[in-house]
Image 1 (cartoon, rainbow, N blue to C red):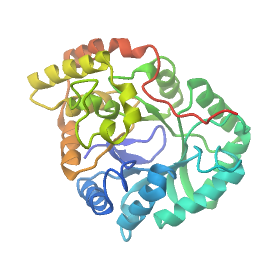
Image 2: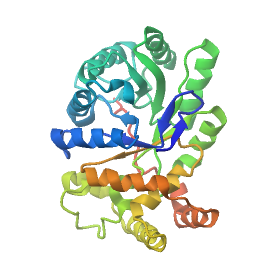
Image 3: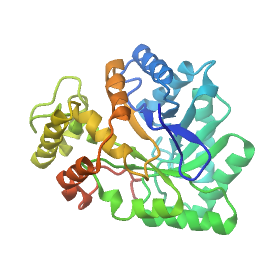
Length: 326
């Protein structure tokens, strides 16, 4: 396994991390437990979840999997997106974050999380309140490092500036949609993170499965795929992305690897990336994803991938999660 520092912090995380938003739904409890233990056996130490994943089942299952093994992993969770109908069941106020942290700790069967992430920017809560709350959580020992997610570049920079001004702990990482099918972070977020020493943790590194090559038509979804389980996902399937998938597959064939392996390896070659979180619903998927760690790409191959995906530096992000307004 290869490890990198999480941003400019001293924390080392596996270059391939485990995403868990399928645990409890697309992967049942027994399969999820098997995947977690296999990942740990292979040297993966970064496990990422959130309070809302599969209605909190993801956190509960992880808690079961880590009994007696908690010290072996860097455990990351999130809060801030909508949890319920109440006026305080969302956002990054002190009220909501403290409540959600305690609930996450109970489900995860631990007394601390290694990385606590704000799931999205909250325009209705002063950023000073959020950052002070996170700083207090670190001081209490219940949180070791803090991160952001779904922040625009200016929002992240504002938070970092206030943390420096006030002497608060600062964000060491940020999660964003980033892949060959979504290079929009390279416009503003990547330069900010490189300058400020913030590690990027890409989500949707395979564009929800589009870059695996499994989708060949905008109309037909393979059985068990994300598009099959979630009809809303079909909005991401268009001819341009399917063509990109085919182009990546063609290059992967010349390198004797899968499209997934090649797509993940491209991300791992980006200096700003600290760890690439990839979900799995079967152990076999995890094994395939691990192959990306051993694929070394030369400058010409990286240049070709950059050219194939150049159009995805512009336009709308593949995905971004924000709080509903009003």
